[in-house]
Length: 298
Ligand SMILES: NC(=O)c1ccc[n+]([C@@H]2O[C@H](COP(=O)([O-])OP(=O)(O)OC[C@H]3O[C@@H](n4cnc5c(N)ncnc54)[C@H](OP(=O)(O)O)[C@@H]3O)[C@@H](O)[C@H]2O)c1
Image (cartoon, rainbow, N blue to C red; front, side, top):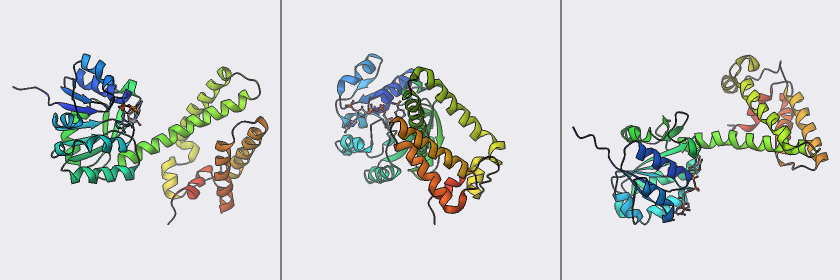
């Protein structure tokens, strides 16, 4: 029985692409690589990958072509020099960009006779291929299914549907939570260190607050129902804590930040959300009523 695995091409050898190549090589796949800066391929060639001399050669080497690039413009910069090789290939673009750019890229690939799947990698490069890694995918289901056995090695695949922009949307929404949380931890630490406390002393407190916040959000008792169900239902019970009370606290954070000389952008943005929630008549509702201000209204 022939158990030889089909070759995979990986274009883009930043930290993420490099981690993917090592993982695919370890799983026994022949891997062809290409990168704008060729020297980044050296450790991978030493580990068993084959370096293509051009994007065209890289694309022509495998039916499955995985991209790990800074953004989608990089895809055009590279693949527009390899258009003759695109017909019949499956492009799995694991680069970050907007859902709109992803849909345009899928149409572009289709125009060149290639299948297109988009992905959002939900793990740092160092944990690619480990049990904690997962990746959102969207695009034609049959194309995804055909390539899932290979993609599974990168991280657990979570297929979201045929709308090719969905993986990017989910990825960005997760990064929205992530980046805002990181900024809040740094801001809170700056606020305290302005009074002479060392960051080393306070930062662990801020990190613990992130964990406690997650536990609070996950606890159904705190929000009467699960948070998502409350938001869907437009149900914002304020028995435990009201938007007016939280808004007053947001105001106090702005005052303390002003007094400390620390950057105001983040607390002012939060205060603005509470101000508008209260002004819309939700002062006695829960903080979750902020959703009514933020969401797209008909
Ligand atoms: N790193 C992570 O932990 C992580 C985690 C989750 C998701 N991601 C996502 O995964 C993707 C790759 O991440 P990364 O950290 O490896 O990114 P990176 O360090 O930005 O490397 C990206 C690759 O894109 C190439 N590139 C950028 N612009 C190009 C252009 N105009 N033409 C040709 N090549 C171009 C770079 O080539 P050169 O080597 O020649 O510069 C490099 O190979 C990103 O979209 C990122 O958002 C990364």
